[in-house]
Length: 144
Image (cartoon, rainbow, N blue to C red; front, top):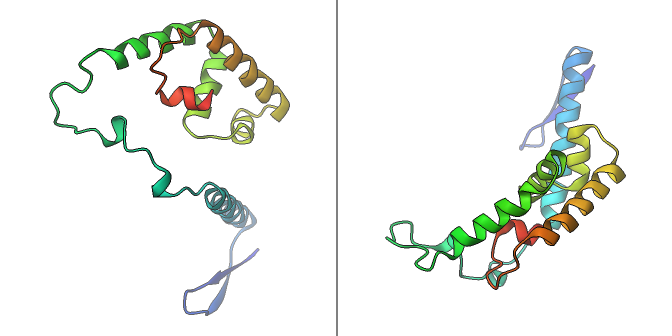
């Protein structure tokens, strides 16, 4: 298999590789191009950012949560997650980590619709058991 490399100078070079290695290189390039397109669509402005939350907190502050809000929120999330099936927990966590439903279905080798329905059911079940308090600032809530 012939693999072409284009250098930043515009020079193009071709290298002969085995079919196996060529397949890996082509697949890697395809995934990289896909990720570039995905990141391009998901741009956001720094002006739109809220200047609150743990991301911008002082890491050296002695008491980041004087009223125990994060601890209470964490406990509510843990209790609601405990009600989900293992598959739903895993898929919702992957979704919260930034993977798309299509990526999750590819990783698990499952049909897109199956994964979508599982996540939808998990969201519904999570929200049913989640203790709705006025402080819903969790990253998991942004996905749900």
